[in-house]
Every structure is written in structure tokens, then in C-alpha cells.
Length: 293
Image (cartoon, rainbow, N blue to C red; front, side, top):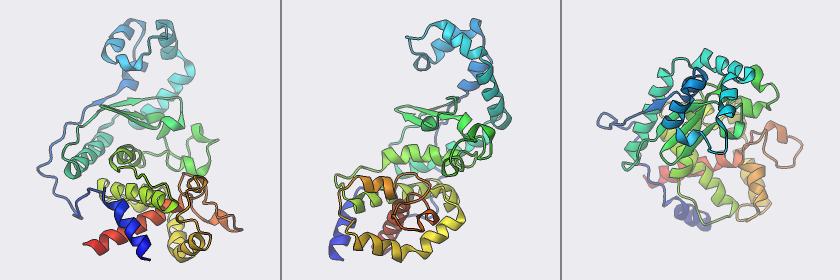
């Protein structure tokens, strides 16, 4: 047990969040700059293209001719996609307020934080491009937050599309920052990777104060209940199979990465939520923080 606590303490040294359940944000000032590029682009025309290219040069790669952008503006399928996003996001004030609150929380915990410029875009339902944080720019693909039952996601697996909602947008935005804010560990053992994922989730809980656990984890209530009821058995499985200090990278795919369920290779695997290792890591971080305060 001493070996476990030593490694846990060593890995957690890089976590800089202040222990305060309800931070006082009254003196935290942020500047939230949101650009509705999606509206500017699809409401534009050939005549307005040059103005867009001057204002957003990073969104117009030079290898594409102007005709390609004009065709994109007039593409029937893309205009349908834009029309669907406008139904939910013509007014973005509520989301802007959430982003501003997130920025305040980040700045509270990390005073050197510089707010990026926020741009809303459409990416033709490219799931891997939901939220992209690139230096001073934050891109949010609105067409990936239309609701889990939207026809655009008909072919998506349930564990993916249940996060394609308006409520989950801020979680994905916060996670883009959490990935960069939680320092990587040089330890590639399975337990270190679980803790790394747990630290990120722990930070999300702080940055998204009041957000339901189900939303942060991307789990249904039944899945959280399953994890809680089976926590001892999960630990027994990891220990009995000598997984904790294994450097086998396949364990991340089985137990940490986003998936429909975790892969114990047992008959009841499909009852488990995907990424159970991250949930276990979160419990480890919480226990460590509780004992160290």
C-alpha cells in the first residue's frame, strides 16, 4: 500500500488547484470575445468573401481558390446544416455567459490565464473537431451540439451522440483547457494514466462548478451507480491481473479512452461504462485530496 500512496503523491504534485469549494470570483475579470464566423460566412456572398479573408485569414488556407469558398457558401447541404444550427444557436448569449464563467474559474485557479478568442464554426459534423483550442483561438463546432436525437447523428453510437448536446458543449470546451492545464506525467504505468485522467476530471469539477456529475463524465445515472456498486470488484480485477503498474498502452483503450463500455473481457462487460479507469482515477484523486487537507 505504501508503494501506491508514494506514486499517487508523486503524480499529484503538479496539480495546482486551490482547495475551495465555492471560489469567490467577484474580483476576477475576464474578456470574452466571441465571433460568430458561421453566421458571417453563410450569410455572406462572393462580394463579401475578401472581407472575411482579411478578418479571419487563419480560416482560409491559401491553397483553396476563392471559387471553392463561394461554392461552399452556396452548397445546399451546408446551408441546411447552418439552418439547423441557427435553430438552436441564433442567439449565443447563454453559451457566451457559460464560457465567460468558465474563463473566470480558470483565471481564479490559474491567474496567468489569457482568454482566447472564441469562434463558432461548422465542420460538416466532423466529430473529432468538436472543440479545438489552438493557442489564442478557441473553435467550437456548433453542428456537433444539436442534441443526441438529431437526425445528423443517426449513425453515431449512443456513447458518442449523448454528448452532442447543448448542455455538454461547455464540458467539451472546459476539457480542451483541462487537457493543457493538467501537466503530463512521465510515468506510463496504467495507474499513472488512470490518475492523469482522474486529475483532468477533478479539474473539470472545479472549473464547471455546479455542473452535474453525469454531464462532466458523460455517463448516465445508471452507469455511475454501476461504477459505485462495483468499485471494489474493479480494483480486485486490476490487482489480480497485475495491471496497475503495467506499461501496456492497450489498457488505455480498454479502460480510459472514450468507448461504449470498458473491456474486462467478461460476460457482463456491456453493463460497464466506457472509460471506467478515468472514473477510478477521479476517486483516487478525491481521496488523496481529502486526506491531505
